Length: 224
Length: 254
Image (cartoon, rainbow over all chains, first blue to last red; front, side, top):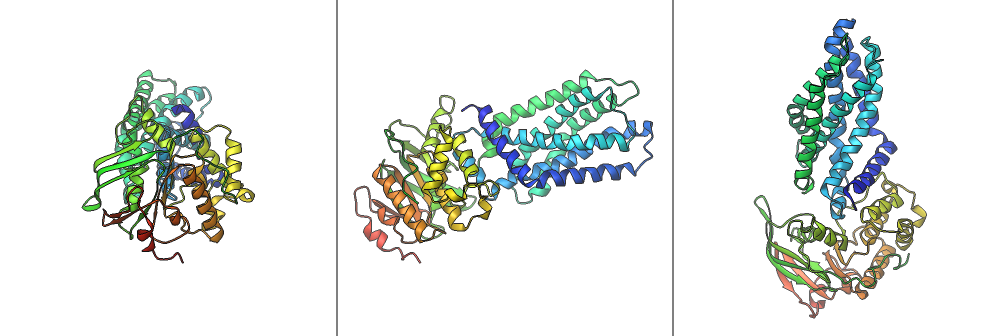
C-alpha cells in the first residue's frame, strides 16, 4: 500500500471522528472568534490601523486555533491505545503522521473560512481583489503551522505536561513562519496590494523543510 | 457466535519467534532480563506469571511496538525475516512481519467514536485486505456482534468491546497471534467463543503466545507453558513437553 493511500484512509478516519463529535472544531472556532472580537476592542479599527495591526492579529488567532486543535491530535490516540493499533499495521510511520497533518490542515482551514470573513468585517478591510493571493498565503502558512504542530504534538503526547509543552515547543519554531505569513498578509492588505515572492518562497521553503524533517524522523516521532 | 469467520489463510506458513538475550529497561526499571526463548511455528504457548513479571513487555516487543534495550528478536517462518533490523528492501521485511502478527492487548485498540463495522473496515483497509465488506461482516458474525455493527464502540459493554478487539486482531489472518490476558471482561459465552476460535487456530497451525495469570478454557489449549518472574524465565515446559504441571498452578478463573 502506498503512503498516499494509507494517509488517505487515515485522513478519512480523522474526518469521520471529528465530524461525528465536532468537539475540536466547535471549540476552536468559538475561541478564535472570541480572540478576534476582543482584539478589535484594543484599537480603533480605521483602515490604516487595521492594515497595521490586523495581519498580526489574524495570524495570532490562527496560531491559537492551531494550538487548540493540534494538542488532541495524538493525545486522543491514547484513549484506547489506538496509536499502537495503527503502528502494528503495515502502514509507514510517515503515513500515520501525514494522515494527521492532512486532517489538521482541513480542520484549521475550515476555522479560517469562518475567521477571515469575520476579521474583514470587524477590521473594515476589503478582501476583494486579493482573495486569490490571500488564499495562497493562507495555504502556505497553514501548511507550515500544521506540519510543525503535528510533529510537536507527536512529541508532546508522551510528555507529562503536554498541554503546556506543545505551545512552549511550537511557538519559538513557528516564529519565522509567523513573521513571513504576517508580512505577506500585510502586503496584500496594503493600499497597493502585492504578493511578495520573497515571503511566499520563504513560506514554501519552511513547509518543505519541516515536511522533509518529519519524513526523516517519523519513526522516532511515532514510536513509543 | 461461531468459531468461523476469520482464518489463517490456507497455504500460509505460521510464524515462529525467537528472543535472544532480550533485555528491556525503562529507566532504572529492568522489565526483562536476558530472556532467551525460541517459539517454533505452530506452538501454542501460555505465558504465565504474576503482575509485573514482564509478560506484557515481552508481547509488546514481539508485536514490534517497542525495541529491546539489548538482544535480538527474530521471526522465522516460510520466509526468514528479522523484525529487529532496520528496514530492508525499502522496509518490506518489517511490513511483511507486521502483516503476519495479530495482537490483543490490555487496551481494546479500537476507536470509541467509530462503530464496530467502521473500526474493522478501517483496519481491514490498513492491512490491505481485499473484499473488505465481506470480511467485516464475517468477523462481526463470528464474534456475535453482527446486530451491533453500527453501534459506536463506546456504547458497548466490556465483554462486547473485548470480543470486537479479538475480532480485529484476527481480521487479517495473522500467523502469529499475541494475546495479553484476552479473557478479561468476557462473559461465559465469550469465553466459549474465544476458546473455540483459538482451538481452530491451533489446529490450523497458527502460532499463539498468550499471557494469563488465571486458569480458563483457552489456557488448556496450550502445548507449552513458560513462566516469567521478575523479568526472567523461571520455568519452561519446553517444545514437546507437558505444560500441565505449570498450568495446574494457575488459580481457577472466577
